Image (cartoon, rainbow, N blue to C red; front, side):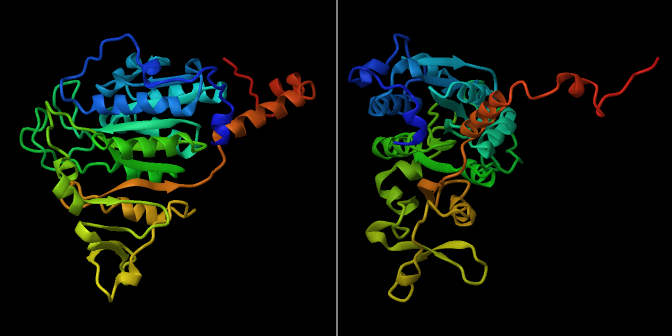
Length: 349
């Protein structure tokens, strides 16, 4: 268990999934992928063994942001895109809390993009679940920051001209210490990624491919169909060769000429060149290159799993240390000198 979780009080009694279900009616469209994520999170929470009153879910605006209503913990349905900022204030002022952010591709990457990248670079002790359905669902089907180029929607009737964000690439570029991707329909994989994120000290971002069956149905069918997924899903396991496909006939190698990563058919001649996944590599270079293997249409191959998990100083701990130092030095400062020192001016007129 991480040092961060050790600070949060334990539950006095054993808990079950039922303990984390609120009395609120779950109001998502029938068939929405959010149901699967909610069930996975509710089922996973008892594993933490934490008192429910010391767990907080903070959300922004969007379909996913109804999440706090359905968790029998403390929570806040905050404002559009600002969940990471609000959660940062909570996490840094209350180290006895386990703080989770639930957001969507529109909420996090459009109006909330600035707040997201700063939470990541600071390495605040937050767990950020980014539901990505590549569409604005709550406002009825406009294109989002992760929609593919050419996407026909109500707001782009002739096709989107915007190049989409790759949330995992963005997070790695912002120096996030833990970055992962999973899929709503893969309960086992989703739970395993959540488990690793919860145990990570600092910010953990988990992108969850989530189906919107009303406005963008089938966006991730290639990754969900059993036969197609065999050839398309690159499952990353730390310390294991990156191979996939039926009978593991595909693999990832580094192109010696460009340094980029590419997918190849595994043969006796190149088997020794297959990349071994190192999620703990201090350099983000290879993790970023892995994130770029996901093509915008998810038709060919997409890596899932933990791309990066490294140790960095946690913002909350550093801030607490500074406050302790300030308290120790109380009385040694000169307020009058501060107010009338060289950095003051007299305004005339």
